[in-house]
Length: 254
Image 1 (cartoon, rainbow, N blue to C red):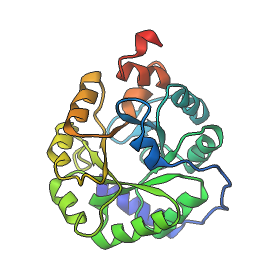
Image 2 (image 1 turned 45 degrees about the vertical axis):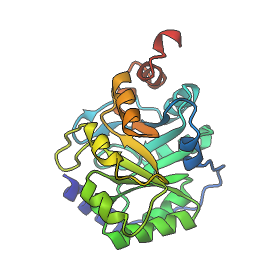
Image 3 (image 1 turned 90 degrees about the vertical axis):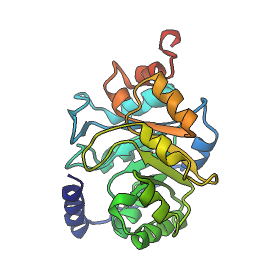
């Protein structure tokens, strides 16, 4: 699946036309996670669908979801902009930027400098770079381009081997551990535990995927995570804001 996604991205990049730059207010993704509102930072994801689970939320209204997330006190919002596999769009991100006062992460499969420039132009505050689909040089080049352009970067890894390898080239300010194996789509939050000890103390650690309960939150915090990225649990709840409060054990008091 991951190979297919990258091949699709390569075709998209070949036909990419850069849009005019959006004039929006920017917010620091890094600062939001470094000084979270709760005991763990929360990156709440907008995700209409996924290749492994299909449609997660039929009534998908980005402006309403963004308002729900902001009202529930999340620290940042992640917006899936991949159309083919996740039913997202760049327009979703632009709408969220225009209607919330939270940092917004563009979550996509970024493999080319044109996509970084596009992210700047559509108003993203941060981008995701997935180490498993990038060479060390490409990752370092895209990381530098992004940070030079004022974007924060969440660098995602899934294995100790890939993390150790990339740390020989760069030390990202924010490192995400994807608990989901992108080759098999199996999820295990113990992946965060296995990698946490190898993350530099100077980097913020984000645990991504498979976080569904208060116990999951407590586990990843115990492993050393500074923040979590959660999408599915929020998208499948009665409302996204309810999902946030439920995950933190606040639902009955909301």
